[in-house]
Structures are given as C-alpha cells and as structure tokens.
Length: 437
Ligand code: HEM
Image (tube, rainbow, N blue to C red; front, side, top):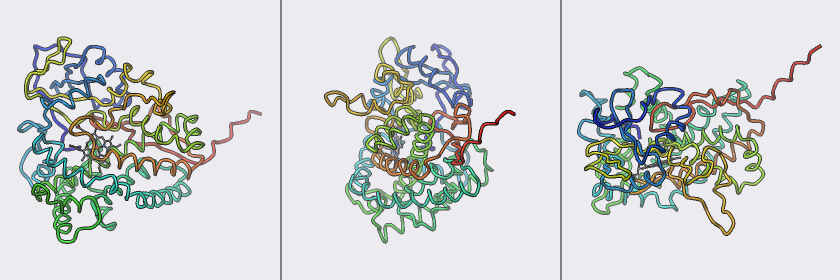
C-alpha cells in the first residue's frame, strides 16, 4: 500500500473547502472520527485543504464510499509524476518498479492481473495455511512468554502484531525461513517513514527487496513450491504474469498483507483489553470470535482510507457536489464504517451487532476490505490469521493487561493505515494498594 501515497491536487481557490486537515497531527491520528463526522454531515464529498498546501476530496458516507469504489471514473492509476519517487538512483528505480502493481492499475490491465491473483488465492489454498499459521503463532507466543518473564512487560505490536503477518506473508510468497529476518527488517524500514530512519538504510532496504524478489521469481520459475506465489509464477492463463508484474505483485502482497493485518491484530487486542466484558464473553464462547474480528474491522478499520483515486472526468455526486476531472479523491473507509445511517451507535464497540439477529437478519457489511474491482484479495487470509491468533493470544496470557493509558497511546500518522503504534502489556499482578497507617 505504501507505494500509493500520493500528493493531492493543486489548490483551486474557487471551490469551497472544509476545515484543514493535518494527518501528521498526533491528536488527529488518535481520534479522526469527529472530524470525519463533520465532513459526512456537509454532503457526499468534501474538498479538504491539507497541511502541505494541497487539496483533496474526501468521501466519508457509507453509500457514497461504495459507489465511488465501484465507479470506473475514479481511476487507480497514479497521474504522471504524482507520488512517484524523485531523482534517479538504484533505490528510486527499484521503488518505481515495485510500485507498478495491480492496485495502481485500472481495467483492462487490472482485470487480467486480478483474475490470476484470485485464482492463486483460491479458498482451499488459503485454508491450507492454517497449520502453519498455528505453528507460527505458537512460536511467537512462546517468545512473548520468555520476554514477559524476563522484562515484566512487552509491546504487543512489536512482539506479536507486527511479526505474525510478516511471517504469514513469508508463507504466501514461499520465502525460506532463514530469509524472513531480512524481509522483516526491509519491510520495517520502507514501511515506517514516521520513524525517520537514516535515508541510506531505507534506500538499502528498497534495493534489497528488489534484488531479493528478482531472485525469488527466478527460483520459483525453476522450482515452484506449494505456496501461493509459486502458483502465480506458473499460471500461463492469458500469457501469465511477466517478471516485472510478478516483482510488483510480490511487493504488493507483502505490504497489503502485513500493514493491514498488523493493525487489525493490534487494534483487536487493544479493544478487548479496554472492553473486559467483551473479552470475557469471547473467552467463554469461542463462537463470538468472528464477530469480535468483524467489529474490530468496522470500528478500527485498519485501512483508514483506500489508496488515492483520480477523477477521469467531472463527476456529479448529487446534492450540488461535482468533483472536477483530475481531482485526488480518498474514500475514507474508517468514516464509512462509522456512518450512523448504517451502524446505530457507530462509535460503540459492540461485536454482538455482527451476530445474526431475530429471523437470521444481519447488519450491513462493513467496508473495511473495500468494495468494487479492487476489493481485498486477502480478506479470507486476514480473517483466518485473526481467528487463529487472537483467541490463542488471549488464552495464553489470562492476566494480560495494559500498562499505559489507552487514551494516550500514539497512533500511526497518515490517512492510509490506522492502528496503535504500541500496545504495552504485562501479566504482572496489579501492585497492592497502599495501606495508610
Ligand atoms: C485486516 C487485513 C486487511 C485489510 C483491512 C485489507 C484491506 C484492503 C482494502 C481496503 C483494499 C482495497 C484498497 C483500495 O481499493 O484502494 C485491499 C486490497 C488488496 N489487498 Fe487487502 N487487506 C487486508 C489484508 C490483506 C492480506 C492478508 C493480503 C494478502 C496477503 C491482501 C492483499 C490485497 C491485495 C493484493 C489488494 C489489491 C486488490 C486489487 O487491486 O484488486 N490484503 N485490501
């Protein structure tokens, strides 16, 4: 997802604007929902000035978000020069090649790439990953227990929510276990701009990923394994994928698969630790776990907004709102999922709303996996990971509790991904209250 971070359209002083938005503001990152609620009340889309002096159109209602994501007049192809790496160096060239993936494409290119990917992600292939995900989870929980005994506390993001999805994507790509530490390190470096790492070490990670995936593709072509990526290297339908397309696909799977799932696991853990009744209910009745996961996806959408779209012509959204051709548009999934017209009491965390009601009725589906032609290819895998790992995490550490005020936890900045940067926990008993003499 990282490759689609994109600057907004240049300022157009003629159009009315909503209040300015600074995605880097820690208070906004922690709780953007009141701002989005105001935009939703204004109309189907709002033209928002960004802190960098540019403008973007934000769509925040549930129905309009789905309509925009299904409408071919909103293109996924980044406009010439926009959001592209600047300069010419091996790292920038690697970055540009890795960004030519299907999430940055429209039909008919997208249709062909998508067909091949959907075939590789067939349900039986995804479900076959279950035993490996169970093993990887058990390994991480063992390591976490050691760290808790040694240090007294751990950061759940660092010990669990980050490494697990990276290891699972390693399975999807068929990366040997010995190479996963490299993959994890490169992934961290290119995916953490807010950590202000040394530019040299980030460049090294881009070229490392490029070289690694080039070699991986050659290996899979020669000797395919049973992994999903091997299936993509071997599928010759419609001519199959060429090496450039496979390279970008490997990168897309890595980033689409890890950042999102990491935030799902981190947010679900945090929500459960701050809603002890829901945690107790899920521990008592395992049938509640899928509802906990759906409610986390809705309430704490791991992708705050989709990737940027660009209008190919003027688009009339109704209520007097026309988005001009060439505008940058963001469908804000986190806001759509809090639309009170679809989700009563949208700010409450209530897994029960996803359980069949009287007469088997179900609520509107959430939009956390997007909608339309780019709907998430990995939704089944993400749900599988969460339903395997979360119950095991909470069963392994019955006394797990937060060591920080949840209202003060820092969140990932930006409009693309959403989740807490740290979830510090311990299993140590609470200190005894001081007894006055
Ligand atoms: C909680 C976890 C996840 C969430 C919330 C999520 C969400 C999304 C969303 C919203 C989109 C559409 C973006 C857009 O329209 O701009 C998307 C696309 C995609 N996702 Fe996921 N995703 C998750 C996990 C995964 C996993 C585990 C994989 C695979 C390993 C994956 C692979 C993809 C791919 C390849 C696309 C591009 C589809 C296309 O362009 O047709 N995702 N995801």
